[in-house]
Amino acid sequence: MKFCKKYEEYMQEQKEKKNLPGVGFKKLKKILKRCRRRDHLPSRIALDEAINHQHGNNCPHECTVCDETFFPELLKELEDVVGWFNENAQKLLELHLASSFKKCLTWLTGNHSKTSHLGLIQEGKDLVNYALINAVAIRKILKKYDKIHESSQGQAFKTQVQKMRIEILQSPWLCELMAFHINLKESQKESGAVLASPPALFGGCSFVFDDGKPFLSCELSDSVKVDIDLTCSICLDTVFDPISLTCGHIYCYMCACSAASVNVVDGLKTADPSEKCPLCREVCVYKGAVHLDELSILLKRSCREYWEERRKTERAERLQQAKEYWDYQCRSFTGI
Image (cartoon, rainbow, N blue to C red; front, side, top):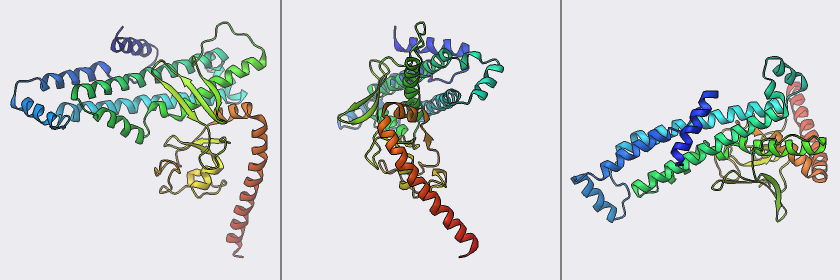
């Protein structure tokens, strides 16, 4: 079955359950077909394009079909898809980490499936499938664009999307779902519970050490693999109390505070917008940072000795910073 048909069937099935945004794969392909027909017109424009192409100018003339329709349409759809995925992944993970009281309230409101072990796994699996199929759809439509235009503008658009932080495979919530999947499996082993063929989120998701460096590795499909480096590039150690900046890079919380020139008491929300990510040098990346709670649980479970040692060190550092902060506030208030 062609991917376009498979994608349309999947989205139709999902929209019957809930109103999901998606990539207008069929519509975008029609836009490219109009562009292809235009390129084959026996006109002076087509001749000029052929001449310019021989001189190395790919898609030399302004392509009104693509520039005014294709990319703006794809960008809007991509923003909707990533926004929906992030919002629902966040809700699911918050429910998993919620107190017993909140879970009881959720159960009383009628959402019984969302509070059960299997229900959480199934919803997580649905979110991953949604992210995966839309990521593949975007890759394929951009590849088709470059093939028709014999250009690299599709790849350039993908790079721009990554800089705008709306690439679904770079979402911190995908990282959290990967950790969530491993945590559920480990919890099941520790409790000794045996579930009848539980649906797995990821076929090949694992927490591994490669040359002493920790990674979250996951094969989402034959063509999509996600590897997340869990080494903090500031302290050069395994991330502790991990946080993901809006650019997608992961650091220890205290290391991120240090890079943003803020005290741990004030937190990253008070960081100056001009402060940059130590790796990519992007600005305005601290205010919307996401605490990776599921990843923190996974690291605590997988690196017990390191985690305990680091916890003692961090506790002493945080107490010292808090003492200095409140001493300064008292001196400022009393004028001493």
